[in-house]
Image (cartoon, rainbow, N blue to C red; front, side, top):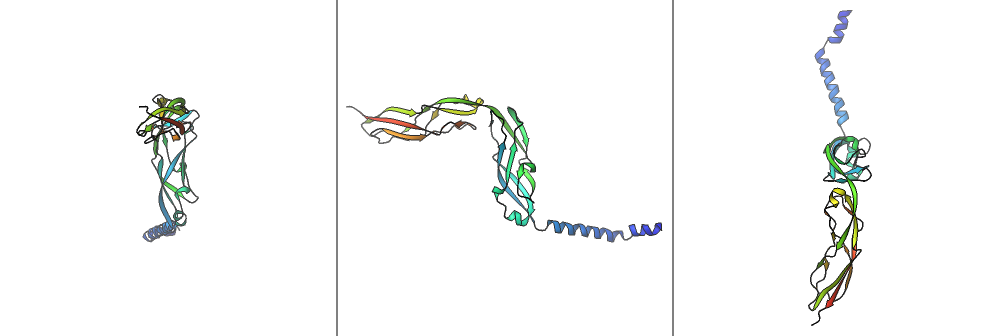
Length: 220
């Protein structure tokens, strides 16, 4: 009886091994057939920024997301169907490392996120502050011959800015975009955009001001 059991279990091992391998390959073919992979560049959204804090420094604006799924779904997938979000609710003032993975990616059902790049990002938080800065009107060109520039007024004369306290101290004032004065013979009154600060994270309370420039005739 024991010999018969051994024969059943161990007999024709080579044939059984090939059968097992064939079954595995067949299963893989059935499962993998009809699947595709796609790579999207997706905007990175930072969520739950702690109150009174702002993000400073360079943070990746986009991440690469590679996904796998049924070919019919992948073929109709658009970048807008995929989003990447990172919560930094537990962050404190200073720099910290955060990690991105499939759990940060929101995609349609039956889609598997295989890779996210970069995996690690460095984020620095600074305390938010506010400052009032004077505005200077920038004028371009010269009035018509026989005329000269007179009084120049900016309304409002100051604008509030918000941003990281560590960088607000470097801001001394704001300029308008150039207002063309070439050939002018009278008063100019125009709403002019402000030149935005080049420092990341600094926001203006308003984007434009009224500039009134007076041009007077030169007495001879």
